Length: 341
Ligand code: F6P
Image: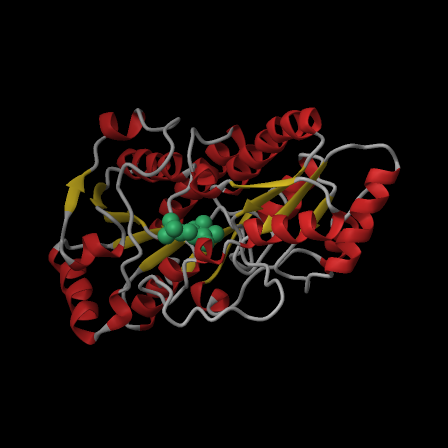
């Protein structure tokens, strides 16, 4: 077979182990591997590299994606879709393995609708792709949040301050929720739950009255504080998503806490640090299993499908089934995690 592979959307640690597994599995089958550079842009503009064993072998522990990525959306016009289809054919691909989040996979689903043989692999540190327990990049991001909270605890405690930590997560609070609990946050605000600032203030008062002189508050970037902000002129990506960092939710919340409680409060935005660094052991194993499984799916002719993991089992689901859905945190976890202790 001739197998194409691309990584699209925001980068995440674990992409390189996934591409490595795609390549090594395919090459062991005697396949040829074509790497498309910078996500769908590489297919649209036919920017490719030939992936060999030596290239693939050495990328296991590297963060980011050595294929490059972009948020290119070829569905924006028929011309760009036609360019993608014609380059697909020009490279004589028997399949294209698209590794990405809901935006990247929505393009794969559209190509499948048009009869092209594609296979999807779920990647996003937000962990919000439906039908799978884990997306590539989530575990490493959670580790980064946990380590950051450990560091922020000592400086907050030394200065007897409250510290608001803004983490990524537009519609789902996986990173905020799991990272916040792992890092001992006193309070976590999630996009799934309308913020109750009175509850936050009263919990922080309780924390203080118990003799603790500092507090850690984790807030997901997608949390809406008060009135919806007018983001009409805000920058958006090719899929129409507003750049949430512009909302400054962490800084705003820190101001509100300081004003209301008279407790000196600082804020920090973890931002793209959450997407950097060497992939965790979990993300390396997940990416390796996903990448190898995607090639096996292609050899079985299971196209228009995405590989997923449920429990410890790999399965496949139709790409169609994820379109327009977001996997949010389980309500029982939300109820427990928002303020655990
Ligand atoms: O990849 C998803 C995501 O991490 C979101 O949580 C975040 O809002 C966005 O990427 C930031 O993207 P960019 O790298 O384009 O600023």
